[in-house]
Image 1 (cartoon, rainbow, N blue to C red):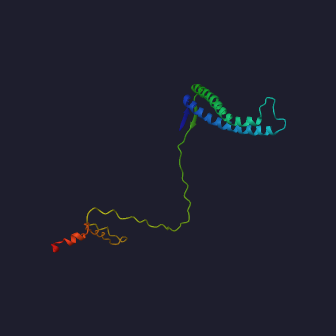
Image 2: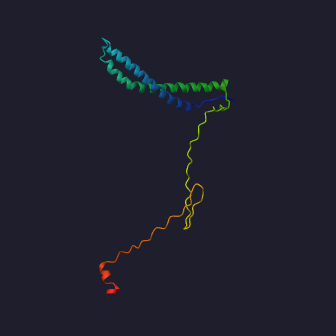
Length: 179
């Protein structure tokens, strides 16, 4: 399929370009700060390295280590975004006169390589025990009979207890025989 890029949305491109330049500027600023810090460390160890301005290069390095990534990210974001916006506007004007960039797209076809034959290993898988379904509600339940499950009977009913307190000595003495 043949396609042609006739226009680029300026505002969408500017937003994307701003954030990309911000990140790239910060990374570049860190790189420059590390390089400048190493150079300042070398210069401060050299004899006769103090300048007439009274600024010690050893204190100048840590300050730049903090400021340089911030300044580079802001500078890259502002100037890179302006340059990108101008280039997109120029591209959109030129496309109107000459036509856009043409490119061909083909649908992706996935081809699968045949699987390599691996040596077979014995299957030591343990069969998974699946419990029987829950019993239906009711007094007469018989679980399903199968070769894997022996015949089961429902558990016996719990014994019934008489929870009345035992008679006291007074009740025993005043029973019907003694009256």
